Each structure stands twice: as C-alpha cells, then as structure tokens.
Image (cartoon, rainbow, N blue to C red; front, side, top):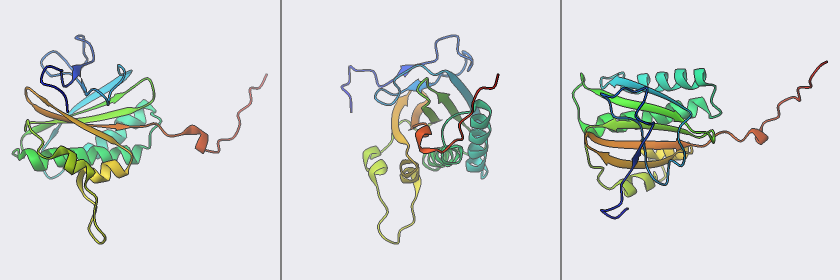
Length: 183
C-alpha cells in the first residue's frame, strides 16, 4: 500500500474544526481525497440493532439539507453498508458509539466515512474486490462499490477509518427544462 515512512492519511478540516478539539477530525486518505471539504457533518451513532437505519436516516437528512448533487438514496445505502461493516467487524457492545462523518468536496464529490475501534482490516483488497457468484446474495462493501463508491481505509490511533467517495450525478444526463430569465 504505502511505505512505512509515508503517512497513511492527512487530517482535515484545519484545527478550528467544527468537530471540536476533543474528537479526531475527518481524515482524507491519499488517492481518495484530493481537496479540502466545503461542508462537513459528524454524528455518533449507537451500535445497537438500529445502527444501519440510523446511519441511512442521518445520511438522507444531512444530504437533503446540504442540497448535494449525489444520489441521496444510494449514498444512504452506502452509509448503511459502512456502518454495518464497522459494527459487525469491530464487535463493539450495543452501548458503544460509532463515529460517522460526511464531507462535500468542491468538486461535488461526497465522502462518507466511519471510524471503528478495530485498527486492522484483514484482507481489505479481497473484501472490496469480492463479487457474488450466481445465486449468491450481494453483501457488504460489494454493495457500496456497485452503487459507485470508491473505498479506502486507514488505521488511526483510535482504530481505523473506512471511507467511501461518491461521485456527483452527471447533470448532462438529465432532461431539465430550460429556465429563461424574464425581464
């Protein structure tokens, strides 16, 4: 992946983060994040049986309020997949809280990231390249990739971060009516 001398990620937003100094800021993984975010949101979601539904709901709410140019339902599913993956593999108790962030980049790209307490991610490349065979039910990060997300992960002091980068919708593919200026 990278040499041991090379940093795995860079921190942003800058130290005056809205996330507060007591929490770790959003992380940009090289090769996935190419610019500073123009908008960020953060939530702590309890790792109980409602965690996936809550992750989807927060994602829908924040992206609707931010008026993003991504498919909000696909982004909500991707957020739910990231959260389900974090809870399933970090094996935290139901009272634990999993950190989730949403960042909008100047390019219109959206980053959704989940931070869990397990530092490693065994066989990451195998997990993200897995495909269901005929008759097998789609699952996990494959669903996020099928919905168009680019995935990455990086270890942190508190565990690891798994990130999904979602491209904006192609506005030229829509047939919007022309709006003319009136005098």
